[in-house]
Image (tube, rainbow, N blue to C red; front, side):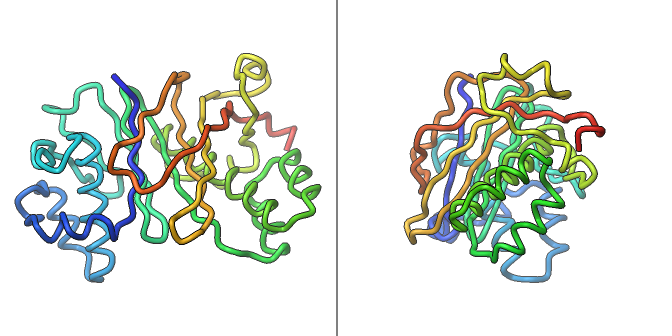
Length: 249
C-alpha cells in the first residue's frame, strides 16, 4: 500500500462541509467528543480534521462516509477494527491548516507554521527541547529567520516521532532525541529507538513558511500527496531519529 499524505487548509474544506451533514458521517464516539466542545471554532476544527482524515482514506469526497473512525477520549483518531485492519492514521493541525498521514504501519505527522520569535525565545525553547549538538548548531546560525526555521524543523521532527510511538510529547525525552541526517544505516548504532523521518519545508499561499514532518519505523520509498492538497511538497530531507544516552545530554 502507498503511504499517503493530505495537506489542506481548513478554509478549503468549508464548501464540502457545508454541503454535507456531519451527523451523517461522524461516528458515535466522534459525536460524543464533539458534544463536549463548547467553542464554535474548536467544533469546526474537529469536524474539518475528521473530514480530512476520511478524504485521505477514501480518495474522493463521494466515499468519505464509508470510513468510520473512532474517537477514544484523550487519544488520537483511529479506524474501527472492522474496516481499518493494518492501516494507521496520524493527524496534525496548525493555524488553520490540517496535515494527515496514512500508512500500513504506525505513523506520526506534524505540521508547524513558522511564526516570528526573538532570538532569546528560540534559545529558551532550544534549551528545553534540543540536544547539546542541536543547540550548538542553532547558535552558529547567524540569520534569525533561518535559525528559527531550523528549530521549528527539529521540533516538528520530534513531535512526529512521539506520535509514531503513540505517546504524547515527553519533555524529559525531548533533549535526548537526536535527529540525524540519513542514510540511517550510518547512524543506527549511535541512537536508541531509531525511526525514519521525512521533513519538508514549504510555503503557504499567504507566503508563510511551514514545516511538515512524518515518522515511521521503517524506510518508505515514496510518500504520495493527495490530489486535493493545498501545499506543494519539494524534495524531502531524510533523517534518523532516536534517543541518545542521558550522559550525552
